[in-house]
Amino acid sequence: MTSSFHEMWEELRPLGRDSSSGGYRRYAWTGADADCRAWFRAQAEARGLSYELDRNGNQWAWLGATGYQDVAPGDAVVTGSHLDSVPDGGAYDGPLGVVSSFAALDELRSRGAEFGKPLAIVNFGDEEGARFGLACVGSRLAAGALTTEAAHQLRDGDGTTLPQAMERAGYDPEAIGPDPERLARIGAFVELHVEQGRALDLSGDAVGIASAIWPHGRWRFDFHGEANHAGTTRLDDRRDPMLSYAATVLAAREQARLAGALATFGKISVEPNGVNAIPSLVRGWLDSRAADQETLDTVITGIERAAAERAARDGVDLTVVRESFTPVVEFQHALRDELSAILGKTGERAVPVLGTGAGHDAGILSGTVPTAMLFVRNPTGVSHSPAEAADEDDCVAGVTALADVLEGLACH
Ligand code: HGY
Ligand code: MN
Ligand code: MN
Image (cartoon, rainbow, N blue to C red; front, side, top):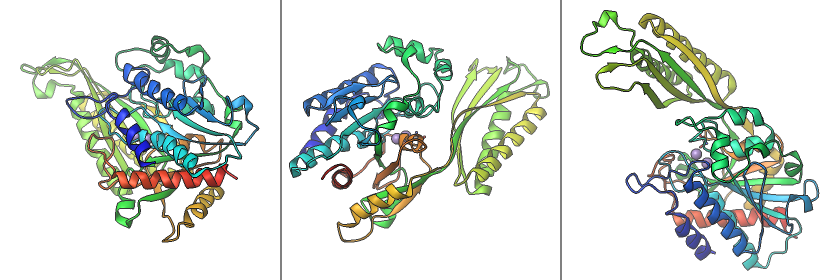
């Protein structure tokens, strides 16, 4: 089983990796995305699984069914994750769950497990929203959490719309939309994911079970000022949006600190972006998350207030648009506890149950389908970075845990 994990890992590793940063640039509907999708299909077909592409471009590999129509309502056990990345992301966020799913199936076959239920391995498209700005597009569309119309409005930084990108990649954008019939077949979805934090490293556990996902969202702050000459415009005569933006970044940190929450301005665009020109427009994207909705609301209100006050002082016009939002997710207790019971049998100690601030497809599906998550230890906690890493022994422990869970849920 270690060989199958290691083998797949080495095959996937070079796909979409940037040689200068060492990070991954696997953005939705690009060539790198196509390479990862081809890898997924090859893994499915190499195992004799029935490959299926759904109306939203998510990939499914079925054992015990030719596709979701063969499956009785609530009968399928599904596992998987995503293969796309954030800009210069790490190797594990997403792919660890997909590779571990195939490796867990290999493990179950080597155990001679007999499946009583259909099993599917899924690759959800565009989980990171790195190109079009909205997280979990593939799973949101399937769950009806994103309308076809709203999806068609999505546009990347070059102005390419989602439909144009899908068409260029050979997919039909007119087909996208809710997939309730498919989701109704799923009795349990279990996503394995590298932990994006250090809780397991601190507790000394290789594997953990998710309890909840913090509410989190993405807001775009547009600061409209007045373009002018950097070398001749008196300070008092400026309407400089960069000042308003800078003050807002500092205000975001202060609001988050006061509330015990998280707030990050990690992406910015400046027009005209000239060294010797006062900008006409500065766009900043805020990612903010908190343990509960009330705290998150307080933080966002505080940041918007500070931004508006500073923009007014600078003679700058401000607009704020919420581009992506995921409410708090509490994973179903029954399935969470079933995983604890299954994994608890290994003896030593109970597998820890932990919350996370990171969003996942399992979180999007949790309102429609019984979902659970397994986390694999990340020794540094670093993620969304080329430095993201996990020890292979822990990855193998994750595969074993996932195999145990799938055996408990789907096998006689
Ligand atoms: O942003 C997130 O939490 C996830 O990685 N999409
Ligand atoms: Mn991620
Ligand atoms: Mn992820």
